[in-house]
Amino acid sequence: MGLRIDLAALQANYRALAQRAPSARAAAVVKANGYGLGADVVASALAAAGARDFFVALTREVAPVRAAVGGDARIFVLSGHMAGSDPGDAIPMLNSAEQFFRDRAMRPGRPFGIQLDTGMNRLGMEPGEWAAIRDEALSQRPVLVMSHLACADEPDHPMNRRQLTAFREMTDGIDVPRSLAATGGILLGPEYHFEMTRAGIGIYGGLPFADARPVVRLSLPVIQTREVLEGESVGYGNTWTATKTTRVATVAAGYADGIHRALSSDGQAARIDLLAGTQRCPVLGRVSMDLITADVSGLEEVPEALDLISPVQTVDDVAAAINTIGYEILTSLGGRYPREIV
Image 1 (tube, helix red, strand yellow):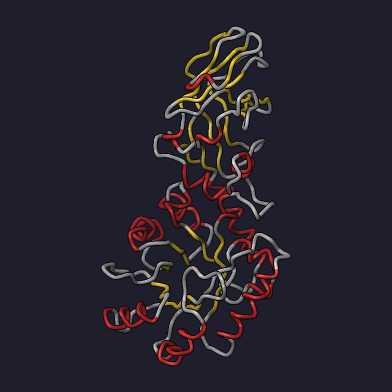
Image 2 (tube, rainbow, N blue to C red; image 1 turned 30 degrees about the horizontal axis):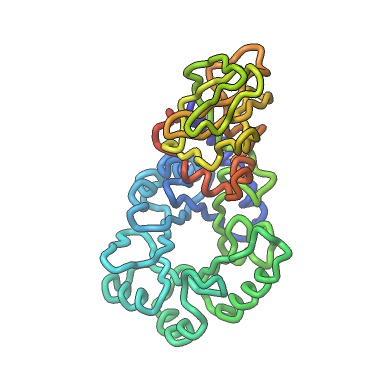
């Protein structure tokens, strides 16, 4: 019971994405505490699978990854070199002229990378800013120049081609390794691969990598079962009322564990099910801080735990029930679950 993390599946997904871009170095994104699964555990497994380049979001995420992967691996910091932060032995991806000059003044001779904005308008130097410092930046020998795709999970979106063209216009002819593709970009094909790819959500079993092996299973322990009679209600606000005698199980998890309150049933209709193997047990009433209730009337025997995430109901299925994405579901998983590493 708890959060089961299949490291063999994680490694298989990393290798499969690396094989999609055989001419590129296959980096792994382990930001947000390894997408909620534990950066140390995830990074160690990926290092064992062959990864030597890792990406985190912030300098404070470097230490557990460094401890897990050793001193010879490279760790890139996507937020760059922010005021008051010290990248240490990591490689900041510098996002502006201001960051470039700060980093070169404070860390002369230390490795750095450059992040360019090719149309996402989030992080990175825009074409004019890059043109103004390009020659000086290249003279300092960055180890990587990268950008990020906004719509890579939609293969036919015209933004992909626009960003590819912009990236080439800003970088063709430079003698520096380049990176444009995260998981979705890898799946777009060789034009997007350049010298390094940055596999993220696909490693963890999420879309758009439809061929990924499931990495996470979330099993919630059943505390109690009861018979709820016709006309009786369950949970806060009386949002679900039994229309017939119903066997109800209460499980030990809730929004304090990252299970969104939006997964509560909508009156009589369930948004999501808990599962006993392949048998579905609709969630009843509201998801509360520590508890969820589900209809187990269809089970001959109630198991010790019911699954929210499993091979039958993936993290993306749970996300779709509340109109969000698998990334949010994974990174929201709380720290109270017992974690079983397989």
